[in-house]
Length: 570
Image 1 (cartoon, rainbow, N blue to C red):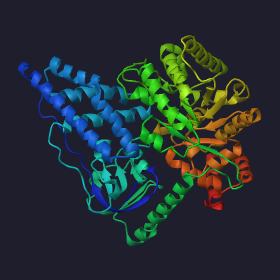
Image 2 (cartoon, rainbow, N blue to C red; image 1 turned 180 degrees about the horizontal axis):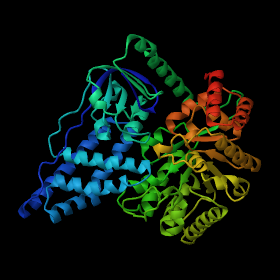
Image 3 (cartoon, rainbow, N blue to C red; image 1 turned 30 degrees about the vertical axis):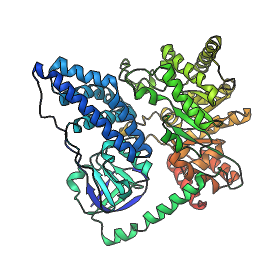
Image 4 (cartoon, one colour; image 1 turned 90 degrees about the vertical axis):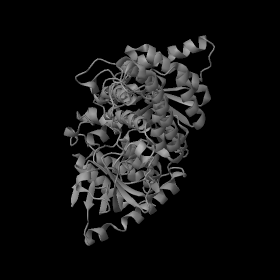
């Protein structure tokens, strides 16, 4: 039987199925007597301590994105605001600890789930997992899952606490019923280099423990009980994938050079200051995108200036003398914070976001700028402003930076004289004004995810219009070419930090358009370096011209794939 889903981590896997059922955490009690209150609170605090201990055990055996997610959840388990909210629930409602845990965390979850932004909704999974961990801590630890042979895991979903129970050296692939590109299971699968397919309806009903399965994440296909012919057609692919990965890793440590020796800067996108994430970027020429949202999303209140300063300092010190591009807070509208409620908007993607929010709430914006500028003396800081739609926006943001710098200097606080000011070009109006924008900034970065959705009027988070969100649309490449030409003429840096920057098929055309700095997920850097090494700069320029002359996204994709076949990677 063949089932079609969504491939969220590339590759092919063959093996036997292992159905994963998480430990049940149902609450069997409810109300308590007043005299039981203190004992119930003591039991909750003991369970919380046990959950933290188990999280520490998990952190010792997890790595990569799995560990990053678990570390964030460990911070939630330790959060005093959550602790106090649960204990207050026990006292005020006279309910047992497990029920108080459920009701308290559900309030936070519901706020996140109402967001129209997929990433924010996925953050609700963190709280769901934290709740599960707290409830599990009330009972003896049981089921650390072990396998005796390689398997393909099938589950409704995999949360980080589930992955801690799995031996990923024996997991060949993952199939889930729910999830998406930003779900925990997908992030974890990609970090381990494990193929994953999500969106298989009624998975645990149609699948059986021990049955043979082929998982083709490149096609979003799962074949249950494959025939001999199907098995033979796929059986050599995993070995080929392993060799390709080995070659990618070889290129990771090398400078990125085209076939004729032109250097291309390959940077990394990061979302935290955690050592594990920074370590994966050792070979990066730069940090092309440092998402500052993690500081805000992982806390129960706005991070202080000092907390932000310390986080930015750690990243700048780790990468000096390489530049770190810090994107200021990109939140609001479709991305909300539980502790900062915003008015409901009918069209949040066109609402109060990022810079717009910062200008409306200067106390938030200026605090972040103070922290960043204070940290600038510890490395090479580039400050990048998101959601910029006009020259007025550019000037307002620059004025805020300069005023903050002057204030710090008056206070006797040192600031690097070499801080660069730039903007994300993700709104078409700014791209169309690139010839004027380039006069007022030190650099810019193309945010192709939002640029594409605004250009094509297609919500990239809405499955109903996914066919309209065409990352290979020729209009997008034309807009990139126009922007790149303006920055090349003025000799100012232009990078690209959207998902297109790590797209193996697209990178040669992007370089041909004039984008000489690409930033991406660290896992894509080796592959991109290999792809660019396969073509000369003149060939990339020719490809770029051909792409811009295409009429449809389908024509562009066909052309890009043909060029990849014509220029095999070294």
